[in-house]
Length: 192
Image (cartoon, rainbow, N blue to C red; front, side):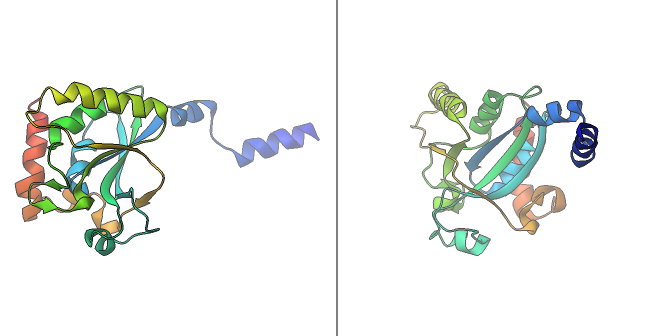
């Protein structure tokens, strides 16, 4: 009977111990810093980032659509949820990049993108991330002449954005928004 149970477990859970350990090293970070196309394009280029998903967080409407979020009535922010390998890149490094690639001193806007959905926000997964985000915000404040307005809040729910928002820059590099707003952010990051 025990032999059958072991075989059942092995067949039902085909992951090796090495694969399970690799999966356990992955963490998530969720940031809002204006349009999620920009945030996604920046973070998916970092070594140690496994994936970035555009989505919505911080509001009260379940399963919001892009149109609903853009109306400003759902309370959601456009965010990027970053899955990263903590052995290759730290959460603290992701926070450093966040401060470098957006203006955290403008309330509910990034450039021409205006509305609460474009607010600067860090949604933390646990107390460790909360502490790191608060420390990082204090450290970053010395680099800005105006006060940082970035919110730091617990992540209660993340909703994936529609498929056409995923990998937007990669799929539309010649689109005017990508050429004039995203490309300069990537060039700035490349020069650091």
